Length: 200
Image 1 (tube, rainbow, N blue to C red):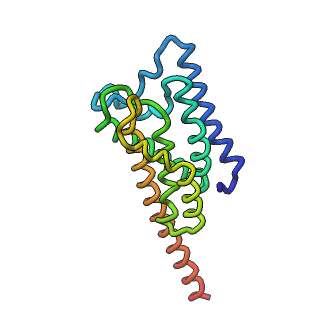
Image 2 (cartoon, rainbow, N blue to C red):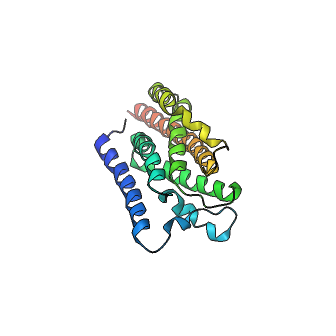
Image 3 (tube, rainbow, N blue to C red):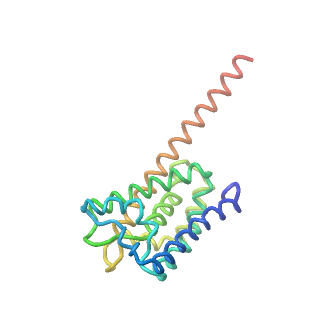
């Protein structure tokens, strides 16, 4: 659980509110915002890496992503705002670049790649950090959300499984990097305490 649960909930809620505002804006302005997604291997689709997670193909698409984004985003905030931003940026960029490189033809949009990245980050983080509490959270998440992982496989027409897959890989890499950073910080802290004792 985040150290400041209400602050974390507010931050994630603001992000989701922004997604709804963009969807509403897409309806009322005479510009097709959805056209700014990722078009694999097309130069004009590169900037979609930045915009794709913010855009959705209608209210049903956005509603389907809302609960995973709220819950998984809030849980990912447990490591603090700085870690959340770093994890999200890695998932966002790796998910987008991977989709652009190998995605199927068409326009790829939606925040589900972020949800997959956050889910995998939360599922594997505890095993990298050897944290019993985080592993316990992962087991509960797997029970409730593990079925999502089938979404990394091709099969459903109109669903960007590539964004799911590379978002998940981004979450895996983020968990590995966060665990490595935690171990380095713990090693430095132990070294500082040891040095302090020797000089006392």
